[in-house]
Length: 231
Image (cartoon, rainbow, N blue to C red; front, side, top):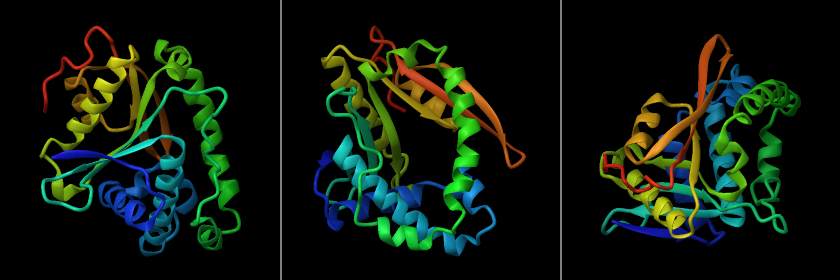
């Protein structure tokens, strides 16, 4: 098993990473997807979501650090992690960075998609922010690393790939005297990260489309970083 940083803005790098995400995530469980695409057939949403994932990977490579975990002998990553670096006030990430996928995505989107997404996101983000600002990790977030979009292809799960990527991030942060934070909406993931040394710092709950939705926020404790057992 090896970990390789993904740096090339080419289809050969971006497409395999997006495919890992596409295979790992049930996109229709995401709250924005529910709000914007809830009444659109899955066969129409899937190609759009794949384009959005390629767009996300492209911007992540430009703004942050993207790492792939490779099984021995494989030419494609089986797991992907975005590691957001401590924020540099002189060079903040550009989440609206133009990508080669923008025009095709714009052609797909229904005319009211932006308004529907805004309507769905605003109250959630407002509530989310108000709740989490009270947590100590939030005030220190810009000084630390943040794990985002960690995913393993279902065909390669239970091989230690995700934990290997997380440990890579933990070691990097510890060498710099920093913490690592992350968020998840999966109770199973909370338990997974706890075994790697993360602690729950806060949570926010909403009701989205009559479905309960909880977002947990976790971070490391420098004194314990790296002390968890490998699941």
